[in-house]
Image (cartoon, rainbow, N blue to C red; front, side, top):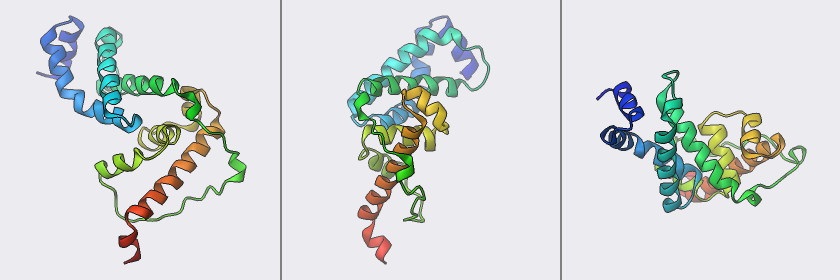
Length: 179
């Protein structure tokens, strides 16, 4: 069944189409949730809640732009709402006090599962900003608005996330780097 037909059937609240849409996109949406939320159970719950919102708001999608992108936005927003519940996760560091030049520590691209594993070692604030900036392509202004923090906080969280990831990569791949 073509995506446009599935969308039309979902707008008519046909369960078969909703089931098909869920099974087609659930793995991708769950992987997005796992990037933001450390606990698999929480990520799964948020994904299910996001699909409920997708199905209940599907009439607001007017076939303009990517449907997958529209769904991703809902999933990301649901993850961010979950993270906002723990707002104390964000640290403020004066951006002027930081060395902003990232240190390059590896040449090979990390596999997705390795990256996900490393991201799970980051504090929530670092991981959230890293995901929004590096993976989703948001600007610091947009991140600041989404998270209710200053632009400098967004920038400092990204710098600290990169530093922490570099340290984790150095530690994990110490033998490869010294060879």
